[in-house]
Length: 116
Image 1: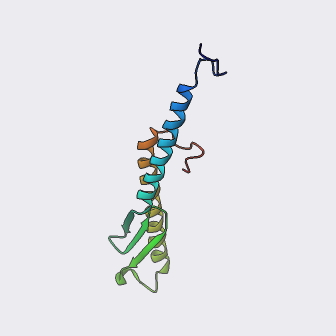
Image 2 (image 1 turned 90 degrees about the vertical axis):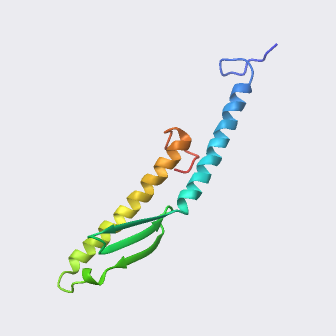
């Protein structure tokens, strides 16, 4: 005779299967996070005046500034270009991470314990 498990059904097989699926999903999410974390994202703004390379962990790898973008009389423009390139690179890395993790989780983002 099957035992009542307190979840409204008999037997614990379904719960065990669910837990195994959650563990596999978590492992897959970790794999994807590692893969995207090691991916470089390059963004350029101002017609190539400023180029930023960032990885999926949001660690900056390089910032290149074209000499033509350096105008001592207009430092604000250069600052704006750098900010724009940095923000775009971070956005691209975040969006890629969300998209790739979403493929694994089926859009169940924000679940605690999965680290995203």
